[in-house]
Length: 284
Length: 201
Image (cartoon, rainbow over the protein chains, first blue to last red):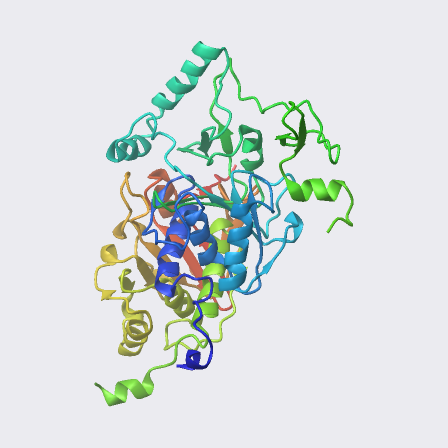
């Protein structure tokens, strides 16, 4: 065929077309039933499980030639996982990439939601390690499936209550369970609970891909997403008193960075694009 | 095999990878923003009475894993041959066997209860019903729910009188239910099972 004259190439965005169709159908059903985990025939990807194989398959299936891709790992564009996935799509899809949140049409993320509010023309793709929020409470898949079918979420409230009994408050700080449009309890992937309020009525479509566990789920734009809580122990967003020591931002999620072996440390923005923007547009 | 058949077979996508992605993206946008028209341009010629928009959607999404049901006017040799050849999908006689069901006319669209509804454990195993309509209107029935900022209005010409009641019944059995896509020339809109009808005050 025509490829004989060129060196060996991949199909656009690596996946074959039949795989994309299967994943696309799963994405459409996931959007139609917000918060429900759609099983899909996850493929082996040229990267190990835990490196975002689910997110990569979702991204590969939605990506078009005109899309602009941003990839973040814990908010940062420049960490290993983000760089390798960005390069993967540069190589296999030839799409434009960016580190600027506002310029991206597709953002693949590992465990953070950008500080800048997302728009209607953007899609946020989450890498999910364990999609089943009930898994550590009930290890049997047929049981958790039945619990979702019957909307039987008492066990999850017991877990949160045990937090209160033991610590005096709900001590879950990441992968904090949410209820989607009043129906399905969903794991927002291990994002810090600081980011949970950003999922509620977000203008962007949010897609979740779990490669090893073979599940895809979704939050359509403007969907009600409530963090589970109790009347007398309402959900509280993590309060961060410190400011970023590089850009001075307050009210953003911070990373604690160890600077030497004498106990020196500093707090900096987890969202590198936000931090660079605050320090001046001229930062390359 | 059949020489006369291959002569009349219309071509599929000119650029299968990019065309399929564009078609899917339009469907994804329509599904995630219910009751809102999404532009859907196609360069495809489809055998009558299959609309080019529906043909593009099926070529993008259907394959040997997804049986297609066609209503009587669509079930002619040219359409069956076109879809079978380009998608590899089986054409089935019973709507409840189909992953995609296509109705050529909203007035005679199959009752939603005749389609596959999914199960409480696997609500994703349900039919997507595609209905060919003459136009999409941003007025009429009022909807709310996931994907809709406050409220959206939507209707199409020729809706059967049972339509609103069927939608309400479809939502009542959530998470089971049928997802609907309406295809007009140059645009599509979707009513996934998650939408709720707003009662008239």
